[in-house]
Image (cartoon, rainbow, N blue to C red):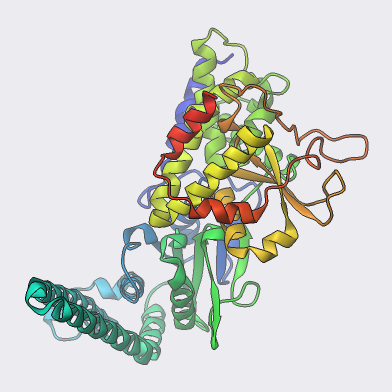
Amino acid sequence: MLNTQEVSKLKHHVKDSFRVRPNHNPKYIDVEGHLTRLSSKQHQIIYGRRGSGKSCLLVHYKNDIGKDNNILSNYISVDEIKRLGYPDVLIRLLLKIMESMPRSKQKWRRFLFCQTKLQKHIKELRELLKQAEVLKVKKEEKKQSKYSAKGEYRGVGGNVGMSRAIGSLSEFEEKKLDSLERFLPDYKDALVKELEKSKYDACFLLLDDFYLIKRDRQPDVLDYVHRLVRGTDFYLKVATIRHRTDIIRHDGQTIGVQLDQDLEQINLDRTLEDLTSPSDYLARILNSMAKDVNLENASETLFNKSGFEKLVIASGGVPRDFLTIFVNAIDNAISTGNVKHLTPTNIWKSASSFSYRSKLKALRDDVNTEAINLERLFRDLMKFCIQDKKRTCFLISQDEAQSFPRVHDMILQLMDFKLIHVIEPDTSAASGRKGRFEAYTLDFSLFMEPRKRNIQIVEFWNFDEGGRRIGVRESPTYHLDRAESALEEDSDEKTEDFIGRIDNT
C-alpha cells in the first residue's frame, strides 16, 4: 500500500504545502471554520505554535477569499523588519500600510505635482527613517573619537562622549515618537480617504509573525496601530505565538489592546490535553489532502492499529510536524521493506530524525539572545526527567507558578516551541502532595528513538477505571526554585551535545 503511485503523489502534495509564500496561494484546509471567522470585519489575534497554520491561513485569505469579497488584503511579514528598534519598526509598519493603498503606487502624481496626502506622508516617513540612520552613524563616529583619547584623559573623555551620544540619540528617538503621535490623526484621515477612493469595501492588515517584534515594545506597536485603524474600515489581523507575545502593559496608563474588548481571539492550537481533538483535526487534514490524489480514508488505511495515534502524539498536535513526520515515516517504512502500513516504530524513528534539532533551531532563530536562558531551563528539565527521576512527565505546582512568574512564563515558551507539551492544565498529585498542578511531558523525540533505557514512559493517553490519566498524578514535581538556580549556571554546552551525553549514560 505504501509504495503505490497514489501514496507517492500524496507525499509530494504534502511537501508542497510546507513552504508558504505570499505570492502563491497555498492549500488551506478549513476544518474548523477559521477562514469564515477571519473574513469578518473585526480586529483579531490568531494564536498558534510554529507550524500550526497561521501563515497559511493569512496568505490563503489574501490570495483567494479576500479577492472574492472586495477586500484589500495587505499581508505584512514581521520577519522582514524584526531587527529594527523602536520606533523604526513602527515607521516601517506605517510605510507598509500606506504603500499598499492603490493610489500610493501612482508615481506620475509626483512628476505632475499632484501628490496625494498619503504620498506626502510616505515621503515624510521615509525621511524620518533616513535621518535616524544618519544620526546613529554620527554618534558612533563621535564615540569612536572619544575612545581614541581614552589614554590621554584616563577614560573621562570617552565616558562623557558616550553618555552624550546615547543621550542625544535617545532624545532624537523621543522626538520621532512625538512626531508619530502628532501626525496619527492625519495618517488616519489620509488612509480613510484613500480607501474611500478605491474600489475596495475594506482593508485587512494581515500582520504575520508578530512575536518577532522585540517583546518589550509589542504593546506599543499594537497600541499605535490599533488607534490608527479603530473606527475605520481597516481591520487588524495579528498572527503570533501566544507566550512570546505581550499585547498590553500597565505603567501609569494602559498601553496596548485587550482580548475580547479590542481584539477577538482565534486559537489554532490543538494540544495533547484531549487527544481526541487533535486526532480528529489532523485526520481531517490528512484525509482531505489524500482525497486530492484519489486516496480515501488515509488516516485509517495507511496505518496499523495504533500508528495514527502515535503520529498525533509525536507531532504534539501541530499540523506541519504531523505531516513532516508522516512523509518521513513512509520513507522509513519502505526502506525497511514494510510496504503494508505505518507502525509506531516508523513514526518514532521519523520523529527523532528531525524533531528536537529543528525545534532548537527555531528557538534560536526566533528569540536570539533569550534562547540562552530558555535552553538552560530546558537542559535542566531534561536532567530532572531523564537522569534524576527517570520519568518522561513532570508536574509544576500552580502556587509556584504564581510565585515564580518569570520561570513559569519560560516553561510556557518551551511549550510553544514544542520541546515540552502540556497534558493536563489542572490536576491533583499523588503521595499526599497538596494543591493543584500542571502536568507536562517531554517531546517524544527526546526519548523514544532510540528508546532510552530504564526510563518510565508515562502513557498519559490511557486512563484508569476512575477516568484519570495513568501515571500522571504520580509524576515528580519540578520545583521552580530549582529552575531559578539552573538559570544562574554559566554553561557553554550545546543542548544537542547535552542530549547526546544523556543518551550515553
